Image 1 (cartoon, chains in turn purple, green):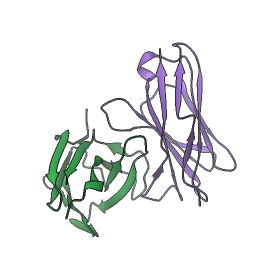
Image 2 (cartoon, chains in turn orange, brown):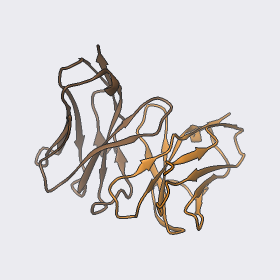
Image 3 (spheres, one colour):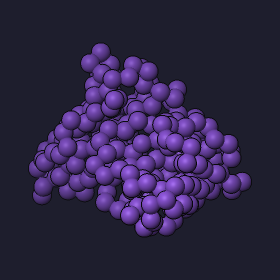
Length: 113
Length: 114
């Protein structure tokens, strides 16, 4: 059983550009959540996907969007990057939307310059 | 508005002693609380959770206590081991027992000295 894997691990982008981050959920998990962790802060909920549908969203603008695929892997897309988007982006998968335990990947460190 | 607060950025304890990490919350709608541990360059790892209808949950060396009236929870690690050195995040959910929209504190860096 493989864990949650994210790619890439590090990324540098220029302000105004677009970025796509990827997440492979743990085998058998149908629910994926994305979090943003700014330096010195705790992770902040961006949105959750359950069976390819967005299941809820945190306080992030529409330029943050996502997808979940039939194999339950997921993408986070961010358009019009801003300097404040620099953060660690974490993906978490769970067996089902009703599970209390979520398994996190190692994260993607995004730097916007 | 920070709904989950971990007021101690860091804690240092001796190996074998008890580590107590504290967390306060403001949202009465939270019905589950979780603790995660995070090592550098790794994602957070789930440690233990507690439902709001309980006041204690124990798993090996880890015990979480919940005081609903004070909106306070704590994680006790006994005995502390050097491998426990990590950042510990308190998180809360109002999702009826799901991990939907977890709200995290800023974390406490625990250092266990040999």
